[in-house]
Each structure stands twice: as C-alpha cells, then as structure tokens.
Length: 115
Image (cartoon, rainbow, N blue to C red; front, side):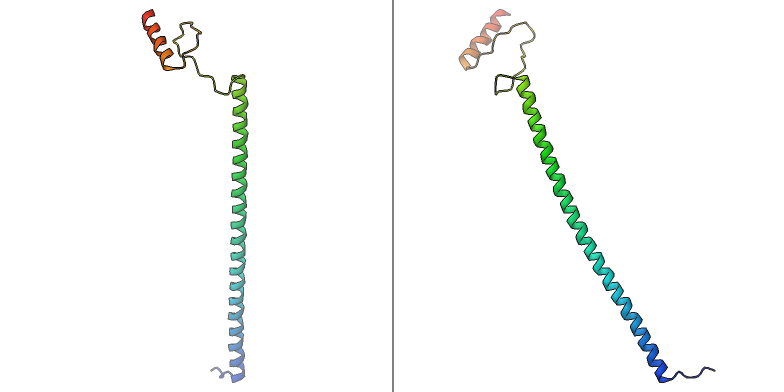
C-alpha cells in the first residue's frame, strides 16, 4: 500500500510539470522563430538570385544584339538596310530590281516579253 504523497510533494510535482511544459513551449516558440527567420532569409536569397539571373539574361541579350549588329555590318558593309537575297531564279542577271511601281511594271513586262 502506497503512502499518500505529502501536499508539499504534490506541489513540487505540479510545479515541475508546469516548468517542463513552459520550457517545451519556449523551445517551440524559439524553433518557430528560427524557422520564420530562415524562410525570410531564403526568400531574400531567392529574390536576389532571380534579379541576378534577369540581369545576366539582359546582359547576354545585349551582347547577342551587339554581335548581330557586327555580323550585319560585316555582311552588309556599306548600307544600313540588310541585304536581301536575290531570288531571280539563278538566270545570271545581276541588274538591280526596280524601286517604284512604274519601273516594277516595266520590269515585269520585260520579263514576260523575254520568255
């Protein structure tokens, strides 16, 4: 048969359980705070990384555009208008195509007459 616990012992046990639960809540709160801080830091890092990636993409795009301009200048050294391929059917003609409607009509008429 167990002896009844003394009222002082019961109070000590209650106080001990209360202290343990308090410490558990404090640990949980501290862990939650650490988790919030880590999530905040992760979000800032992700935002920084996204900005850096976008800046790198824009720099690459600018470099590509500059390279395209350089290639266009090499392929078309004297003009600002890109050269157009010659679709004359390979007949060996090297004359320039007409630029206005009247010249164009005369050019096509000449082509039809020649065939």
